[in-house]
Amino acid sequence: MISVVVPIYNEQANIESLLVRLTAALGQLQRPYEIVLVDDGSRDNSLLMLKAAAHLDSHLTVVELTRNYGQHAAIFAGFSQVRGEIIITIDADLQNPPEEIPRLIACMEVGDYDLVGTVRKERKDSPLRKLPSKIVNAMARKITGVRMSDWGCMLRAYRRVVVDHMLRCREHGTFIPALATYFSKNFTEIEVEHFARQGGESKYGLFSLIRLQFDLVASFSELPMRILMYGGIFMSLMGISFGVFLAVLRLAYGVKWAAQGVFTMFAVLFVFVGLQFFAMGIIGEYIGRIYREVRKRPEYVIHRIIRKAE
Image 1 (tube, rainbow, N blue to C red):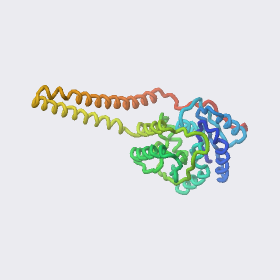
Image 2: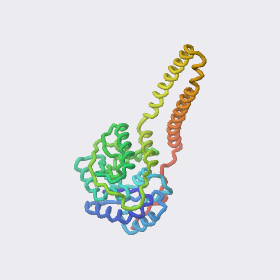
Image 3: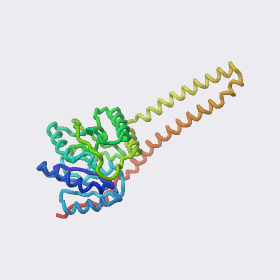
Image 4: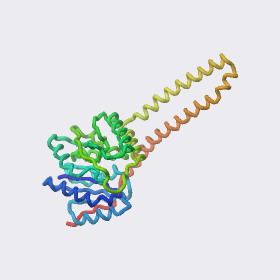
């Protein structure tokens, strides 16, 4: 059985076309399938459209969340409801065409892969979206040690065992593509078509991309903490050296020279204070994540599951 998970947030302009194309692409596989549509607290008519569609098609399952939890939490909510042995994730904006799904499944089965990622061919996004994505991709390769090209494309195929392992983690604010590689023995990438968004507005602004980058770093690496440790040692040594330097010049040139360096001292002090606040901010972020994990508060809450009545 094939399961497709689609996180949806304010996508009323794309839902009708999305369902038609998904149904057509999955129907040609000649095997059982389901489409799990996760409404992530939409404020437009998306949920009403999804409910109406689910009452007419037994292949559709609508997962209604209580509020907007974010894309990755919505995907985990969808994972918790899937029944298939191969799980596909795809965005609702139709930038990645549903017609590529059979290729992912064929690649997974022929190569016996646990995970099949995708690389967006001739990407149709603006330079303001491409540059942050390149940074995320480079950081993901560095942190995970996995040489995958495009970590930001949500069109991916997973074996059921990988999804089950991810669900058992119960992590908050994690980065699903990187987490999946942790549980996958064999994985690969294929090129897929990419198109401009057909309707609605992108939900991934600059702030969301920055947040995604921090989720990646904080969930899979202690690099920021190590940078702070080595940076603190370096700044301490520089401070001691600078103090010795000033003391020598004070003895050599007298009080007058020292008074003339007051503003330089203040400038250096401000730099160090700024670095300290930056360091405390990063440490606070880690402590906040520990606090959220200790509380055991769920990452998402499902309000109801909607399917066609049997």
